[in-house]
Image (cartoon, rainbow, N blue to C red; front, side):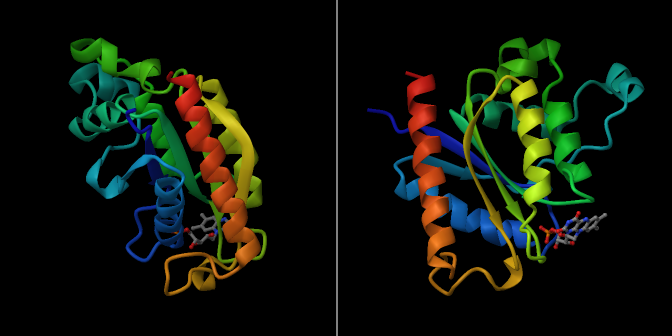
Amino acid sequence: MKLPRIVVMPGSRRREALSRRVAQVCAQAVREAGAEVELVDLDDYPAPLYDGDLEAASGLPEGIVRLQRVLHASDGLLLVNPEYNGSLTPLLKNTLDWCSRPNPADAERSGGKVYAGRAAAVVGTSPGALGGMRVLFHVRDVLGYLGMQVIPQQVAVGQAGEAVGADGRLLDAARQGMLEGLAEALVDTARRLRA
Ligand SMILES: Cc1cc2nc3c(=O)[nH]c(=O)nc-3n(C[C@H](O)[C@H](O)[C@H](O)COP(=O)(O)O)c2cc1C
C-alpha cells in the first residue's frame, strides 16, 4: 500500500532557525511512524507579502504555485511554529494565505483544494520555557478554517536551542515520546482521511 505523504514545514527561514532543527526531529518521527516526508524549506518558495492588487496584476508567485503542488500531492501537514508575540510568524501566515488562493491555470491544485480533507498537526518551538505554546491555539484555528483536520495532539519544545541531541532526537525523553505519539496519530489520521 502507498505510504501517506506528509509535508513538514518550519515557519522560519532564518539560517540558524530553531524551528528548522526541530522540524528535522519531527520529520524523522513522521518517517518512523510510516510516512514519506517532504521537509519544506520556505526559502525555496519565496513570495512577496500578499497584496490583492499584485495578485490581480501578476497572478500567483511562481514559488507559491510550486508549493501548492507539493501540498496538493500530500496527505497531511505538520507545521513547526516559532512564536511571534503569541502567534504565527508573518512568513508562515503569508505562505498559507497565498496558497489558499485559486490559480485559474491550475484550478484542481490550488486554493482550498491544497488543504481540504487533509490531516494536520502543530508543534511549537521557542528559546523560552513555554515552547511556543500560545501560537499553537492560533495556528490550529487557521488550519481548521482552511478545512484541515487538526489532530488533538500537540507538542511545545522549549529551550529549543539546547533541545536536540546528537542523535537527532529530543534530549527530553518524555517530550520525544510525545512527538512520536503525535507523529503516529498524524500518519494514522492522514491514512484514514485519504483512504
Ligand atoms: C517579532 C518577534 C516576536 C517574538 N515573540 C515571541 C513570543 O511571543 N514567544 C516566544 O517564545 N518567543 C518570541 N520571540 C522569540 C523567538 O521565539 C525567537 O526569535 C526564535 O528563535 C524564532 O524562531 P526561529 O529560531 O525558528 O527563527 C519573538 C521574536 C520576534 C522576532
